[in-house]
Length: 125
Length: 107
Image (cartoon, rainbow over all chains, first blue to last red; front, side):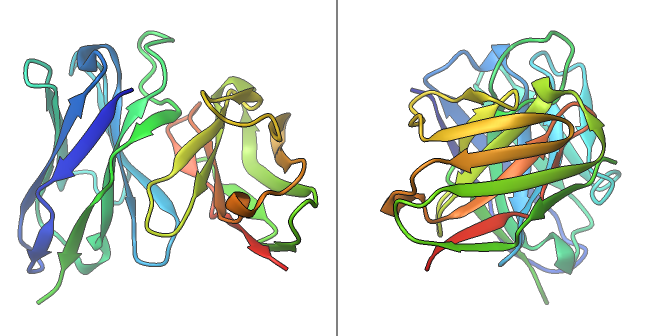
């Protein structure tokens, strides 16, 4: 069964930057779309960003568009989230999540059948 | 953006009872693109249902999903102690959004 392991979270000041990583194992990483989903303290789930299997399509929630950048390295089986211009409202646990199917082709959004354990990001002065 | 509204916010039930959770979309969603998740404290969400009614791998058959258009339902036929958790619906047909969640608590 596949696994995802996030890293890179921590405490950062408003306006700062962080880069999250998500290492995949146990499945063919390059076949599946991937996403980042976050959860603010005591709140629900919020989708952040998605990327296609071959890195040719990306999409972002309005709340992070222009500040966050999703990318992947299929040779390393790793997903990334570059977070710039961080705000207090970006404070959350960030999960990486695997799309449940390689189909339909060219469809960026999926149900998520594998989740990482999450990495905590705190934006505070 | 499609907004998903889950109701009730909290459901208080006893083990063995039937739970019915509702998810209403602000516009019609292709039922191929509706999912349900369970989340327990301190844990990542777990996929229960995809395609509105298909159970994910390893999910017991007491969990079932149904619905179409703007109204979707997750039913837990007989609550087990391990089922008390928060449940989220998701649509992934037009961008991707989650509902606000329903907490199923022990009465």
